[in-house]
Image 1 (cartoon, rainbow, N blue to C red):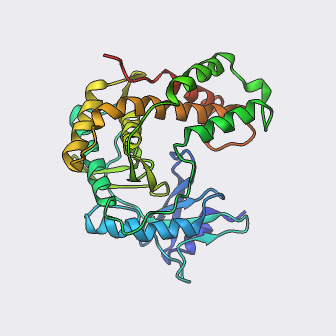
Image 2 (cartoon, rainbow, N blue to C red):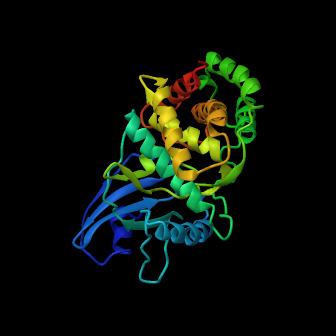
Image 3 (tube, one colour):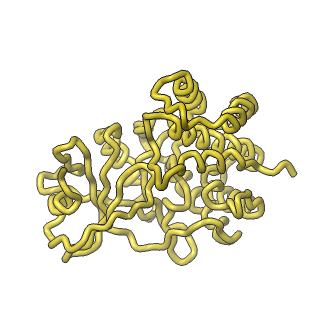
Length: 314
């Protein structure tokens, strides 16, 4: 197997002094690379990701980010002019200079939540100016019907790990699916696709840019806001409603949206939490994995936590 250090040397001419696994991503493998010429981020992508689509989308959003003075990963090309390097195992790798800034952790203050909303509103407004639609790398992202079908197929025996099933979780899924599948989450536009706070770069209290653009696609605006709220405003296992409202206020101030976001986001929040719970539980009981198992039982624990998340009624 080719090492991350060897791959790093194909992107940069500086002496590779250290390669350390970042270990924060749920999907891609990410490493911090220290060289004589600077600090970089190296990523090994999932094999099912299409480099051609990633390259096409990069050509779209990079111009928008530059125009709006927003920070984003600027891919380094190898000596042959390619953005991706392949190893002997068929993995694709990419590298970009490390971006200095602050990555916040939940729960956030109301001021920080407002700043998150402003940053998200600003990038959404900018993405509306794209000359063409991006090509979805994950075409079923946030497609609840698709994920439910995967779940049903799994419990019918498609790669099922029978001993991992949890009857209480499956009963909650049955009841919630009937309730949530009919939610209206409003219009679609081009969205970042994974606008959680771990992908937001802060400088001087403001969102200065975004990481991880692999999910950029046409999607539900209210679901994107709801997913941002999920990542920023969960406090002691419950939604911080004041922080959530501050985030929505920040979003509206920057995006100038005509849509009634405050009415759409509560339902979108419940839907996005359920969808993610469904995906984690399907992973937990299946041989076909998507999310990393950070420790034994992690996927099942995340599924149970997400099933508890709900927008308060009052």
